[in-house]
Amino acid sequence: MKKFAIATLGIATLLLAANASAQVKPEDQIRYRQAAYSFASWNMGKIKANLDGGYNADQVKAAANAIAAVANSGLGALFGPGTDKAIGAQKTSVKPELFQNGAEVAKLSGNFTKAANDLAAAAATGDAATVKTAFGETGKTCKACHDQFKARN
Image (tube, rainbow, N blue to C red):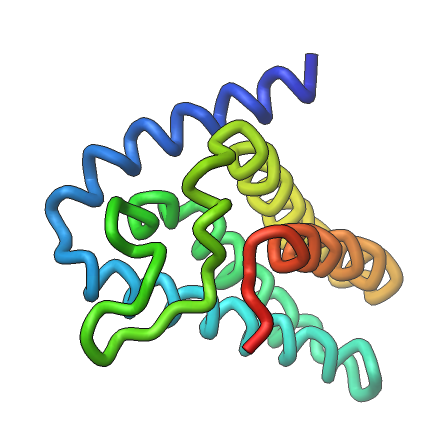
């Protein structure tokens, strides 16, 4: 049942995203999604630095909430038609296969959103060990998508 709910959420997100993407120029979609993922990555780095020493629960909570916000923001809207390749100065490392595998993308997107929400919940506890586990799971969801759909430059 849980997997069905995640898949359903992912598919619904993709359908809503397709409508929203029509309102943003393709080159801007690439730019915005890269900014969102860079922001999430920067916040993952802040959590990692805290886990490696000098744990500050407030910093971790803020970073985890930022990652969850990115995950829940409807990023699927930024993968519209034509964004599978560079447009002008906007380069992309997304593989065209991402646009051909909607069910797999929905699954991976749902996994990321769930893991990011779990990370935010773990950070709210203030317990470094709980955060470390949730952080690892979130990182795995990022890696799973990168391994399948991000070209190595």
